[in-house]
Image (cartoon, helix red, strand yellow):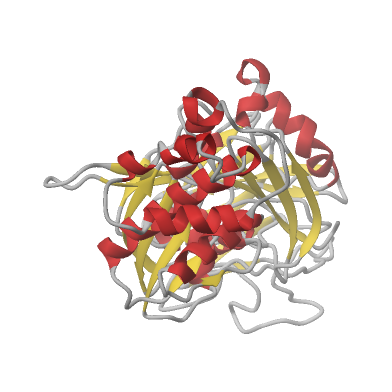
Length: 445
């Protein structure tokens, strides 16, 4: 598992999915269970998290963890705010909410998204924003219409890598309520799927008139032996999905390319409904939630940073503040550009890397900080691919080859941390696994 760069989690209402993601974006290992947030007794999310991914983190304790979905809702573990649209993956990355578990694990939660126009109705989403970010990261279209079927279906308008508006259709929830708590489902019996009944439902939905007046046909057709009782569910599904597609196309038009994101046969049903409207759509590749989590992690400077997190300060456009504090102390230090820094043996975090760090590093000149060689120890460089950790535009950075010098007697530690550029609060953690020592970076006049 040494190649694992990220643990990505999609924790929804009815399911839990987690992936170990390698440095090249591939899946190393995967967990898929129906253990959604509604299945967690007494909201014991911390214990559930440990049971599900604790063994992974025991093996790779400092790998970054990012999570999205209804786990971030009011009924979930940590409620995150809603970001107002328009947003993109970068905005989601800058708004990550950091949480420390009871065992000191660090999780970065993705926020939801919202619209609240003064002249319209408010709307919210949680989890879908991550799938949208994944799709847009792999798409080059200038404008797109994205449909995400589900309990609460979302229709999203996107321009480039940004999505600026969306609306929700409660198609899945209404279907469940109608079948389980109304007279429409009382005549239904078990039976095989009926694609023809689904198509019939869509065709009825596309005719003139209100859907309110058409829903009762799911009962009346059975009473007159024009619909098999076993086909009631498919017919009702066709009615509701057909109405959603009709209303969505009436709102958005037919000009933009349409992509459907989802899993299972539900995507196929939507493609059928669109085709009956004369509209060709495509389905997204599987794994958009994972792709979105990786993209957000990349833009947050998390991906591949095995010694912690790198966060954008929001001022210089670079991921210039790096690493998170040890859960045991929660401390951080303000690091000024012109101050010399020393490595002080004390507990402030973990660096999961077999690397030995020198005793000091100092400010060499404006725009350049270098790890000073410790004659008694040998540096063991490793890859450090976090964005922004290079010498750019007179910024203060420590990173591989940042001074243009690299030799057997003067190596730059690849696990060096970035130096803040705006006197912002910088949180640091370093750990020498081979020597089992902990260090902190502290200011020195």
